[in-house]
Length: 258
Image 1 (cartoon, helix red, strand yellow):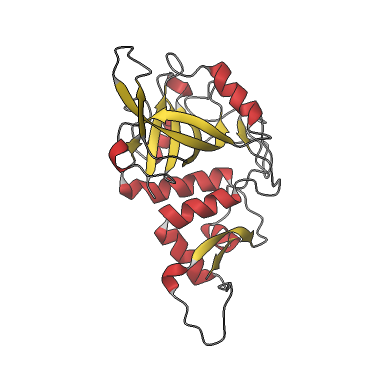
Image 2: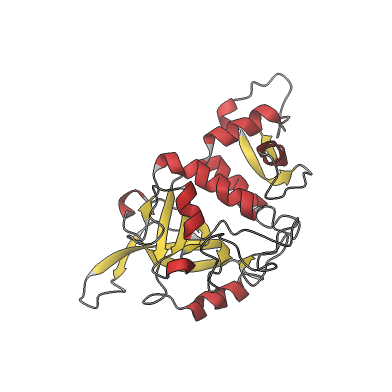
């Protein structure tokens, strides 16, 4: 499993109107019929993760979506140049959408109170603006570049955990952040368990070492192959998570199974 950054400039690509339509749609249905052009298509596999970054909009730049690719890359007509050439694309399942239509404060990276609904505070910082992302992940270009580029390996795990910290505690979608609300307790929990299994080996090991292992179809005397231990996408511990929770609380939230 790998992590790619896609880049979206709404001035000449998908419009805000289309993006807002997806924001409305994802509340009730998973978006899995979307595609994007992929620059580093040679190594992309179905099941790899993507982050969609809004670019070319100044202070509005930042993470606009994340999810998984649900196809292998394929060639199709060039969407940008009508010259008979092809580009490579991949289909996507979008798990979370983040709107940047309103300009965030340049100095504090803050949105107006109530713009983001976390479960623990009325005054929220937004970690999704490019300015905040540049401070934490300076080796990723958050303002320009190709679409569908592999994120450096040493940045992948910290970036996934960063997304986890600020979105997993969310209880409800808002007009700024939207996701499928099939499970209102923790709508994104199964997705993050999947991301951790594929992209966060250090954090996964902490979960395994800190939690009691749940055995599935275990027989007395059977030897457990530790390489088969996975973080459950369906079973979770009761931990009240907030964006300010220590890492230990996030570790305790997940359940390792064998």
